[in-house]
Image (cartoon, rainbow, N blue to C red):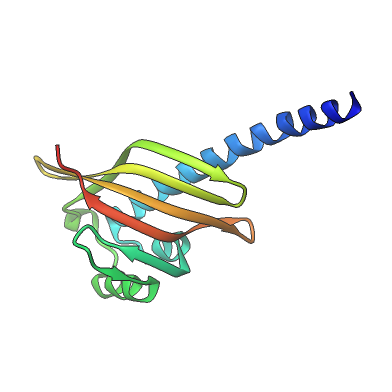
Length: 142
C-alpha cells in the first residue's frame, strides 16, 4: 500500500510540472516567431542550440552557425521593412523528461498571401533553458 501511495504521489507531482513545461515551450515558440518576424538575432541565438541540425522546406540542411550568419547578414528589420509575419497553429507538444518534440503549422502572412509549413523541432533542456537541437520544415499542401 505504501508503494502505491508513493507512485501515485509522484504521478500527481509531475503532471503540473509537465503542464508548466508545455506552457513554457509554447511561450518560447511564440517569442521565437515574433523574433523571427523581426529577424531578431538575439532571439534566434536563444532559441537554437549550438549543435542544431536544421532541414529547411527546400531540403537544405545546415547548422546554427550558417543559420545565424543568414540572420545577422540581413539585420534586424524595422516595422516598415517587415514583409512576412509568422505565427503558429495546431501546436502539439510531447515531452520526455528534458526532451520535447514540438510540432506545429507555421503560418507566414505577407499581405493577402498566406503560406503554411509543417514544422517540428526536438528540444532539450540545458541549464534550465529549452533549445531546439533538431528542426524539420516542410511546405504544407492542402
